[in-house]
Amino acid sequence: MYDTYKTIAQPSEGLFKDNGSKFLSFAFPVDSEDNIRNCVQLLRKEHHSARHHCYAWRLGYEKSVFRANDDGEPTSTAGKPILGQIQSFDLTNILIVVVRYFGGTLLGVSGLINAYRNAAYDAIIQAEIIEKLVEKQLLVEFDYTVMNEVMKIFKDEKLLQNEPQFDLRCQIKTQIRFSELNRIEEGLRKIKGLTIGYL
Image (tube, rainbow, N blue to C red):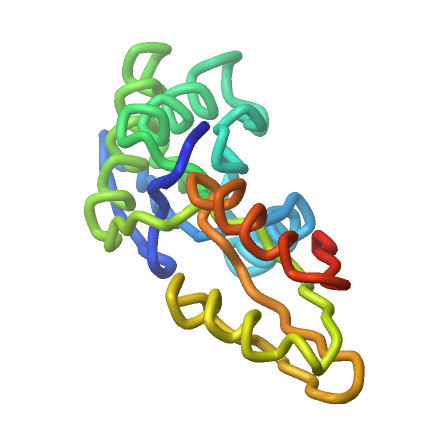
């Protein structure tokens, strides 16, 4: 089970030039395919006169969902080299778009691969790479009468209390690191009348 993953903290930009062509690269932290579509559409509008908007992305801590798009460049000369940089830095929840302004000189297959790879690399090295925990979101519900038992576990395990509601029936949202989930959940379930829902 993966416990952490690497991504970027905020958007970044890079640049690569070759034979008059400019390759502007943009890296974004993303968490959904909708988020990815929106970023690509915004760049297409912002750089509407560019010849190509090639991109690659990877989602999820298991890194199993990914795509590469050549946007009219010869097959595997753009999206694949961009994806290769994402993989080589072991990143996920990231989108990299490389916008090409054609300079009038054809670069050939190897030239294109090199240009898209270097543009993606530049966007990544301009970014702050961070490590994030893989966590499960939980909703813990319990009777007010067992509040002290629940709070002891929350305090001992240093769990965040998100949107707590304390009434006759109490609720607290929290997140627990995957590697700790079974152990902490087992302790919570020993408390009478406590239920756990996954968010």
